[in-house]
Every structure is written in structure tokens, then in C-alpha cells.
Length: 207
Image (tube, rainbow, N blue to C red; front, side):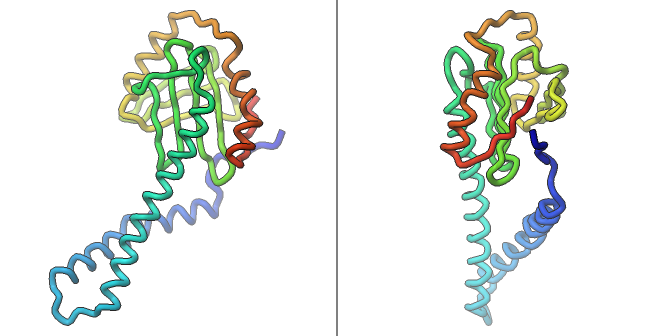
């Protein structure tokens, strides 16, 4: 079984730095220059004016499009795995982090946890956990972190406003007994082939 590099590659790191440079430095400068030209119209260079505002709107459109695209992909994957007797969390027990391409949900009725991560284009982690599959949990501000028993994916995390609530929910769930029709991980694995085919993705098999 080939190991999947879930860390950013050197190329991805460099691209991330360039994106951050544009997002936090160049884009604010573009907005400042664009607004300044709107306020002071004397000796306005029309070509430069339109170039600046095209760049501004194009940047906003690309950001929104990518975020919505990730959200659609996450929702499509999750909806295919939701089933009342296996995994059906309430709205306060699931979170979509569309910019980072992550989803996590906790079903307190079935004792199951689903984690989805769009690692990079075409590669997606989909992990089904039960109460026996994790060792520890943490909350750091709005970041919820869960430590698993799997050496390939020892930690999963997601930013959510419900982090503390999830921490408390799992604490209460530890004192309950669950008996699903079949193991949740097996249920998720049973959907892998169809998910890969329907979404044109590769899902690494986690032991």
C-alpha cells in the first residue's frame, strides 16, 4: 500500500507563500490604489484604472469560486455517506471548513465520526471512526483536534465554532454503548469505489 504524503510539498509550500504574499500585501495595495483613483479622478489613467479593478474583482471571484467548489465537493461526498443508522449528525455537530477543504461530523446517536480532507487535487482522505478508534481530544480556541489510533493519520483537526461543544459531547459519548448494524469503518470502505468513480478522485486506503 503506497503511502500518501499529506504534508505540503516544496512546490505547494512555495505556491502557498506566493498566495499569502498576494493576499496580505499586493491585494490590499491594489484595493487602496483602486479606491484612491476613485476618490481623486484628476489626471486619471483610464487603462490603469480598469486594469486595477479587473485584478481586484478577478481575485475576489477566484477566491469565492474555489471556496464554493471545495464546499460542493465536500457536501457531495458527505451526503453519500449519511445514513440514519450509521452517520447522521445534527447541524451543530458537523462543520465544513471550505477554504482548507475539511469536514468533520460527530453523530452522538450512533457513536460515529466522519472526517474528510481534500488533501490536494484528486486526492481525498475519507475516514470513519468510532469511539474505540481515538485516544485523546483537544480544544485550542476554535480548533478541535482528535488523536486517532492510526499511525498513518495520527491526528485530525478542524476549525469550528463548536469546538468546546464537540469536546464535551465526546466526553459524554464515552459512557454510552453503541451497536451499529456493521462497523462504521467497514461501511465507509464499502462506499470508497463509488466515491472515487463518481468524484474522479483517489481515496488513500487507511489501515
